[in-house]
Image (tube, rainbow, N blue to C red; front, side, top):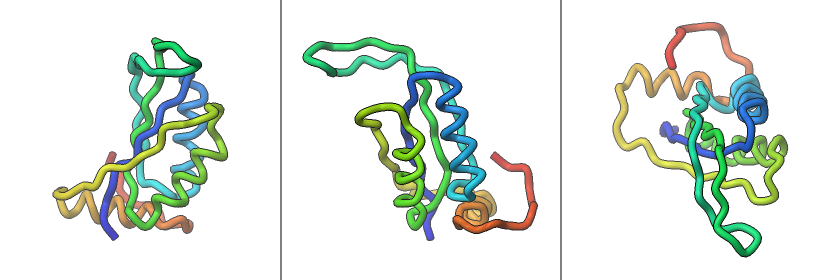
Length: 114
């Protein structure tokens, strides 16, 4: 298993928090971070400009499918952007923590790292 970062955006802070919490509670990702961003994008035949909330999940390549399914289940967007980035290098103890907490199964408590 290799650590990856999965990104998506949400239109409100409440929705971003719900998606982030649910994915982490399901042990599909070790961590989720939310940041406010401004987006410009093509939609409905025009360039749109909105405030959005980016959610970055720290998970593993093996969990990508489950993370994507959960995001799609919880998301209000007609076409949510969901994609991942490989993590080529990482501090080994931190990468191990991501793997330990991204199994999709309950885990034992341990470490407050994010």
